[in-house]
Length: 248
Picture: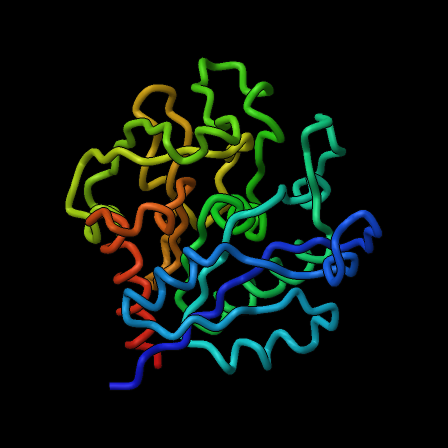
C-alpha cells in the first residue's frame, strides 16, 4: 500500500537580520527534525510545507498531501480572536498565521486528516472561532507553570485526564497519561464544533481538542514528537498515518 504523504508546517523567521550568520541573514523557514522523524517512523512520508505568501496556492498544496501535521512555534496573533497584544512575551509570525489559517480551513473542507501540536493546537482552535489566553498569567484560576525555562524544556511533565468516549481515548485507551509541557498560551473559549478531549489534572487547562464531525481533526497541547519512543506518542502519530491512508 502507498505510504501517505503528511504535510508538516514550518516555523519562520520573517525578517532579514545581518547579525545572523550567512545564509541565515535572509528570511527562512525551519522545523524541528523530530516532527518529520516521527512521521517517517510511523509509516508516513514527511513533506515540509513552506509558508507561502500566495494563498491561492493552498489548494494545490493540499492536492499533494494525504494528511497534515500543524507544528509548534511562536504565538498566533491575537487579532485573529479579536484582541490587541496584551503581553510583551507574545511573539508573532504574521506570514505563518496567514498561511496556516487558510491551510487548516481548506484542509477541513476537503476532509484531510489534521493533527495539531502545541501552537498547532491553538491555531486550529482560533481558525474555527475559538480564543486563547495570550499568557497563562491572564487566567484567573490556579494554573500550573506550563512554560518551562530553556534548560529544562520538555523535561517537566504533568498529568492529563482523557475523556472516555473521545477520539483521543479510542487512540490511547487510557484515562490518564503523563505529558511534557512547554507553552505560555492556553485555550480560553473552544471553537464551535469542537470538544475538549483531555485536560490537565492539576488545573483543568485544555490539553486536547477534537472535532465533533466524523473526521480526523485532533490537536494536543504537549509535544509527542520529542517523546516519540513512548507508546502514547507512537499511537498518536500512528492514528494520523492510518487516517491519512484511508483518505489516500
